[in-house]
Image (tube, rainbow, N blue to C red):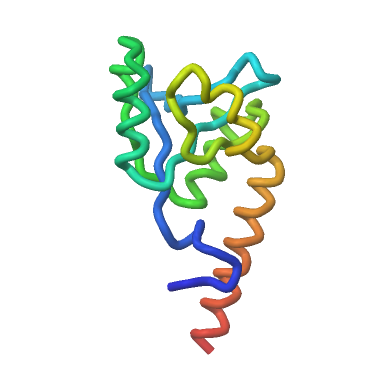
Length: 130
């Protein structure tokens, strides 16, 4: 189903997660830039490439995980409530730090977009059912 507003509620996205003590952590980047950014990927292969190219042994505990608009809302209100923004398809290289402002948007604006898009999709479903 395609909504009028866009595709985030329809197509899956990927985040990078790890689980410790029955608690989920989502990978954030640029934490030294006023709170950091949730790394969000358009395709599973991009998330996997990010992990592979990071080359950090610490990253071996992380894995890509498919998520939905509702899942993103939960992550941004839960474990990533303190991030500054969301970075779409960030690069894992050292120089990507300077590119974060170009591939990111504020957390609050992204949440607002997700919630409005979900509301629009629900209204379209209700109209289609009647």
